[in-house]
Image (cartoon, rainbow, N blue to C red; front, side):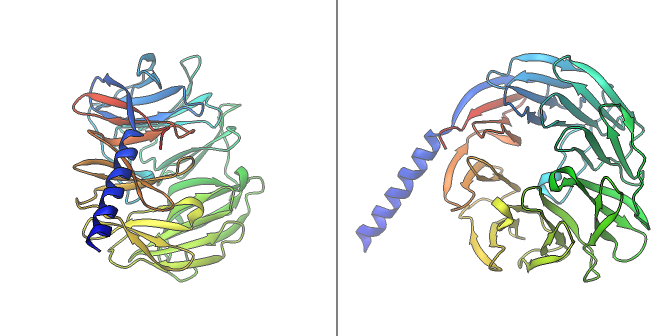
Length: 380
């Protein structure tokens, strides 16, 4: 028995060493200040990055970190941190960036300047600026890149026709709305999902709206009379998920708003941070002790608790190839297999933010001080 235990320890150590060697640094480059936001272009060739308290976005070579262009706007006088309980929506900087699906446009949200700026990436020119947006929660391109949707809080929804550079008039049959805090495109862009704060009960709902007709297809999240926040939207499986107070996680059918299944995650309080694995068949959450627990959403049971000694600060799934679950602690960033939850490697010296290229071969993180690190993770 003792020999078997020793053999198992040696095998785990060997697997960890192989995982570690599969991650290498491509480059470390100097930044003007701490890296606060980063996003890869869809083709993986460019990296949009913002530093410190600035809303100016640098366009960098995604393999070397070499500066290609500066997209300059009105920089904020001081930083602002807009937090969210959901990993997918955490904003750690005065500005965040989103590429259009074809990589031709870049939408930059300047939170303190109350602006959303749309840039032509190749020309390096600003094609559109929306001003006076005081509480932007979400900015999303439609799958075909024709529309830009902005959840602007108490100012409602701004839907922009990017070809015409004009705001579209909302004809939607939505009533008793106090604020629009989130927006997603679903069903190949035919449906738009809105996370709303309501003047009636329940306080939060999800409206599913047909974009062409303005018809409200369904109102989800109020079937049980309880508040909920949207946490996941799938375009291909036509599902979305919500998280309620007390750890209630629910999966809904996009076309009808019908509840498909639900699960209450124990060991959490309030609205827990939740992120979903491949196909929303699993999800992970952070318990009160700072441990990441993974749940089997289909079977409704606890699947595993990651064997991480240090307290986890935040986590996120990275889907695609390879599928990864990231955990961030004061000791650094660890990578886990998104299906088996076996350790895949570490990013030594890395700190958030973390961004991955679409092909899953490259990652970028903040490094020590005013540096950023480009990682080759193609060996994972």
